[in-house]
Amino acid sequence: MKGPSPEPRALKLLKGTRKDRINDSEPLPRSVLPVCPDDVAPEVREVWDYTLAELVAMRTAAAADRDALLCYCHAVVTHRKACRLLKSSDVLMKGRYDAVVRNPAVAIQRDAAFAIRQFAQEFGLTPSARTRIEVDQDATSAVIGNPFSGTGS
Image (cartoon, rainbow, N blue to C red; front, top):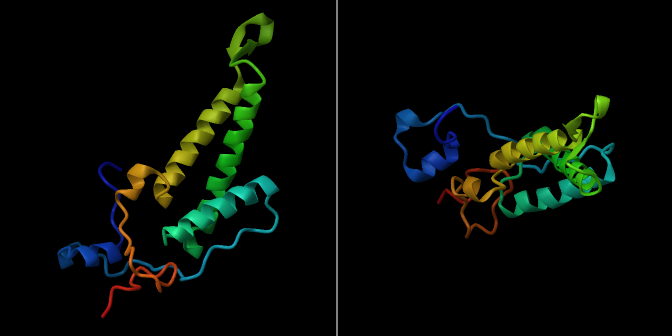
């Protein structure tokens, strides 16, 4: 897909977007936080807790995002493991018949970094992604996950 990501309905309403450009059938997630599955590794849980705290602070956390958030957390852990492997080994190594080949950890690190970047964009966890998200900074009683919280009179 080219161009900027589509804006959610609530944001379009707040901006006063023309009615014919607003999706009145956009699904709304439940206004509860996602719950981390019990069977994740401790390092995945650590990333989950940190990231969820950031999403809550930005008021963008939703239960519907549980699996995407879990994938993001696994990608972060995989990236960290690949980085640790590369720290203790060379980027190039001897392969079959003494040929010099790229360390497989480089590809793992690159693939995990790509996944992290993609998910981070979706969750608004990068500086450029945050420029496309607007939240009411003054709404102290906002219900988490409710895009219409604080918009009525």
